[in-house]
Image (tube, rainbow, N blue to C red):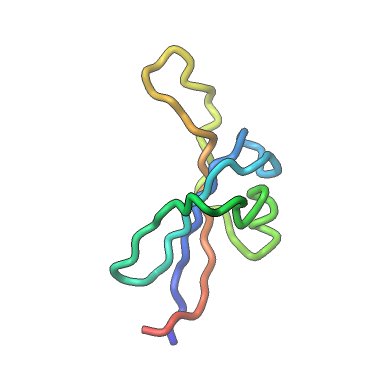
Length: 91
């Protein structure tokens, strides 16, 4: 078994780690896997980024806090946090 990095992308309502999570994408360290949204799923793994941190995830990227993109052509869906957790995986 090898220690590998798991990545969890959580989009939240604000830059506050305690704000409500809007979406998630979990990237597992397994070759040839894809990340899909399950339309049958009714909840996320964590309600907030803080909940994920309490479960052992570490924040490795905080969302840009310089302000919104008002007036731009880019639509932002929440504020994205990137978290990591190291776990044992079979090779």
